[in-house]
Image (tube, rainbow, N blue to C red; front, side, top):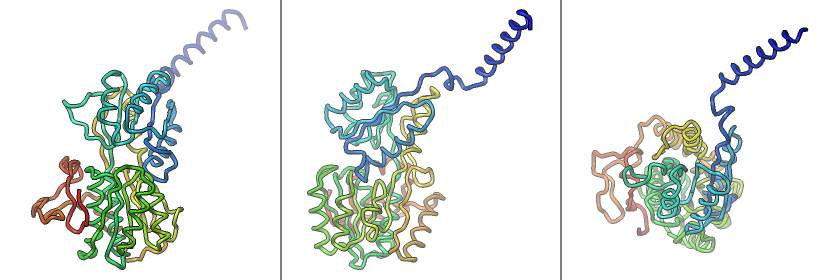
Length: 369
């Protein structure tokens, strides 16, 4: 082969390679990996809130073109500002997921104001246009749908007609879960009551055990919770011979005989939506929400002790939720002081913003906000 032929062949190969590269999406060959940071208020293996996020972060790490960094046990103080700034400055993070409720204001907002080119997606905060920066946002799931289904199962399985809820703080998301759980149980039997104890913080092992034992002493025989790590409540209730509906992630293997079902997060759905917007240069999704039909939340498989009637009832309601034909908060609905909070003929859709400001406990709940 002559030098002229070799040169011609090289030019042809170069052109072919260039054409092949041109056919690829720009980020597939030119863009550096997207660095994403995940921040947790507790340990990643807490069988609860932080574990649910960490499990989704593990799925994110499998995505092409992603570099993920994580930090656990970061308190809702100035410490989280240092963690966020460290991820930006040292790890090159351009998208952060601060996952705990107390990270939003003032911490995330303060760091976001100093880093206009970084996107911040907070779990659970209520982002408002015109009030909060465009590079910040909020994502959450309608987990109250799964808690309502927990309640339906609890309503069938309870023998004492007393169910219990161990909760951290009386914020809207927690109240919404308590109310949904109670309404689900009372849809089976209106005589059922739900006793609530607030521990005061997201992770209070001693108080969670005391609350569970105290409620068991009062005759409560089915428990659920809204604390970061449900492990203590699940194991304490099981030791007392009580039944449990889980929360955040599955706790079935902690107490197989006691575990009925559970309300679980599926955070990878929201993560992917927010990450793809960042990777493609689309506007930051400032307000992301979804429920069972959107794949943001799911239910734990039924335990072996769950009755056929309970399964059929819960499955029927779940099908209606997915079809969009079931409203949890529909009137007439009273709070536990007798005040009408949802008038007759009114029904709130899951997307109605009023539900994110819930400040009451429904009829049937024994407890105070």
